[in-house]
Image (tube, rainbow, N blue to C red; front, top):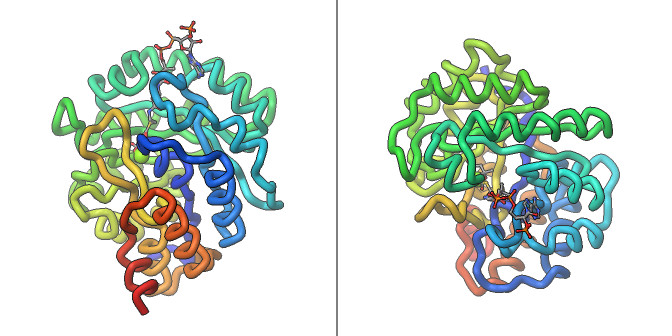
Length: 298
Ligand code: HMG
Ligand code: MG
């Protein structure tokens, strides 16, 4: 049976914009976050407090957090790779943070400059400080269905890293198909492996659409009981440490799928379409959401 309600985690202002080489005005980033909150999205990843030398586009995340109009009931999330990032996020007023590990050793080295085991150790003080400050922590596991450096990744490895993040205290584990190579059969294997030890209601799927499989993967995950999905307005984005990876599934396309299935989500589709097209116009690029393109052509 499909879930009745799905929580959408909007990652556009972070995952969507982090890979953009051209400068984007802070006011435009703030306007995007505000528009997404007005559209009804309840969790918005609004920036990341990583080393600015590694991801220059996210360097101004403090200013973004300082400028957004906080809406009651909306969680403004941030990525934090280490204690320095966590302290910056707390100071900026992030209402939740996300730590990010990988199921691939090579990707872990390229993305956060340490092994998987070292990353888990590095996260421990963040978990402790977050508990003390009452800040919920989400955990990402990247490369659940393939790695740009190692190729195939065993579902058991995904389950192992997910378990470690969950045991460390993450309230939700977001399974990232970072390079979008996964197909529904693979996603099923991964979810089967992870749910051998974790409850399905603690999982989210973070699908990138590089190979056009994101909606099919989401549908399979819905059938298996997953009810939290990450998506990016206008399908913006990609990971700077995963060459060729395109954006997340577009929020507009996810909403259209959920509407068709009669699953509630609480988000105004047209408002998301408008917010996404405004950012695409600013960036001078075409909209990666098929639903947005269809609606805008009407
Ligand atoms: P490092 O270079 O090993 O760090 O980077 P370090 O501890 O050796 O420090 C080096 C310098 O960086 C020092 O400054 C630190 O202060 C500074 P210096 O003394 O040389 O002047 N530094 C920082 N500055 C500001 N904020 C910080 C910070 N940390 C250190 N937080 C590190 C290690 C983890 C920081 C680095 O590798 C990094 O920032 N990586 C992040 C890469 C990234 O953001 N990738 C994209 C996000 S992940 C993703 O997109 C996948 C996801 O969407 C899920 C999916 O799709 O699968 C989440
Ligand atoms: Mg991602």
